[in-house]
Image (cartoon, rainbow, N blue to C red; front, side, top):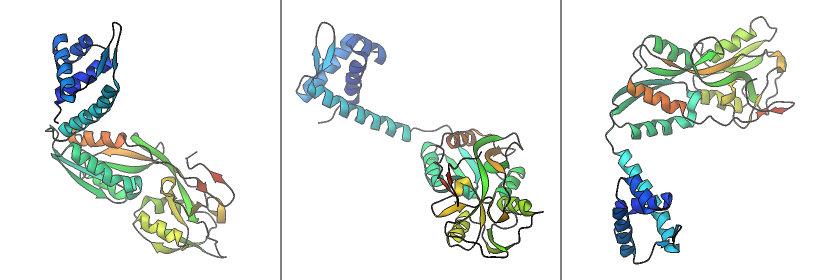
Length: 298
């Protein structure tokens, strides 16, 4: 049995508006046309769908069941039509993002955009914060997510966070020099941490270097040393050690969205809007040696 979507839309309109006349106004049809469509639908299913009184129109039990399926069918048809509707948006979007900003949420976002705008080609670069800033300045990217010290620049803030010193929950520093697991010299995490250590009496040495945030988290979890991450990078098994071992406080930072010189295309603006609409990641409780506090920058 094949159901005509037009009949199903008329049936749903009658239910939502409470009558044939108002349903006809919603669908730009006459009252008699709506009445005819409902009669055809009842003939097709072989059962009455509406119980009419002088004051109201009530769905029968079979009408309630048909309504539920009709709404699901039309929702699927509308989604299918939207999926394959030609999009006026085309071109290339060159997007840069640090590994730590989206993590596992990046592939679904790219797939969502590709489905919505099949005529747009994405060119995504995942690299360090400083590389992304230089690529924007060289007009090698249309837009990028970068780290910015809070209040330093007039840029669109996507998320606020904070740098923290971190170690494995089982980590215990031995006497002498502190072992550090750091990103390469060009990474802002390393620069911020070493700048904070300058002028302190803390002795330190590098035991592990990786450009990957996942690599640094693995080194921390293995107990190799202390590292510098943002609150967003925390995961079970990692604790914040701010204030321990003489470690100085680290600054607040913002993830901001920046544009290249030629980045304000329609395709790039659509992609930026999709980034802005992304739900914020849920913060993990920050495990410290002495207390647990909510993982939000103060």
